[in-house]
Amino acid sequence: MRVTLCDVGPRDGLQNEPDVVAPEVRAELVNRLAGAGLPRIEAASFVRAERVPQMAAPEEVVAAIERRDGTEYAGLVLNVKGYERLRATALDRVNCTLAATESFNRRNGNMSLEEATEQAESILAASELPTTATISVAFGCPFEGRVDPGRVFELCERLETRELVLADTIGIATPTQVKRLVERVSILGAEVGVHLHNTRNTGFANAYAALEAGATLFDASVGGLGGCPYAPKATGNIATEDLVYLLEGEGVETGVDLEALVGVSQWLEGLLGRRLEGYVYRAGVWPA
Image 1: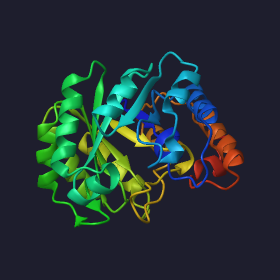
Image 2 (image 1 turned 120 degrees about the horizontal axis):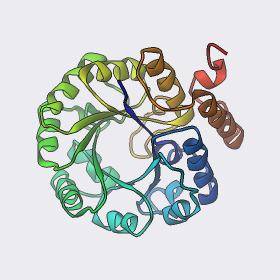
Image 3 (image 1 turned 180 degrees about the vertical axis):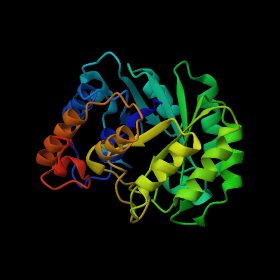
Image 4 (image 1 turned 90 degrees about the vertical axis):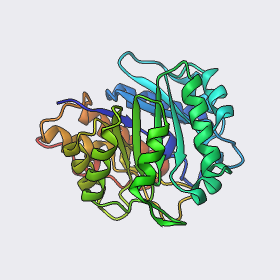
């Protein structure tokens, strides 16, 4: 069995850092991840710089990337304007994101739920690039609490795309909830993936549950970086190297060089000047 891993560190990982990382350094992170064999990297986010200054100048990031065969480079957009900016770059894939709740869409994108859904439908219909649709706060919202799985399913039904990703943005899901929603959305015929945060230490159990339910796409962030400026108390994504260790140990092919990926986290630790949330990069690859 083989799955597709998408490292979202250059985007979701760095957007919650207190300091702004320069575009050329963000591009270097992308290049190092590609060098470790990541099949997909979310390299940039095309949002307003005044709202998320850590993601400013995505065009400069993309221009500085040294493209590597075997890696697909994606960008995140919230609206048609963001998509038009992405389309003018050399990125390979569009990740169109909307939230499952009214409140989170208004905080994150200054749109109602219906407006965000219509924007996503327009992008997916117009895109000349491969697309992924991500439903954030698919399991719970910091402003509205638990999210009805039926609402998430109805949103997924409206989105014409080959890839649907269910995001546990604030890290509140448990394995049975993840398994049931992945199974439910899978009947729509798209490839289903998960974007998991480890806020309450359930992220890796949720990843395994998603795998058993048939998920084939997994977002993760190098070193366990991550968080959302509009999701109070949300901590980092599950660490990519920890997820690779888990999957490869279970006989699932990822195509990632784990030792090289550990080296990326070690470099990133020095860059940010603090210990990261991941475990494998500190414990080391085993067997050595």
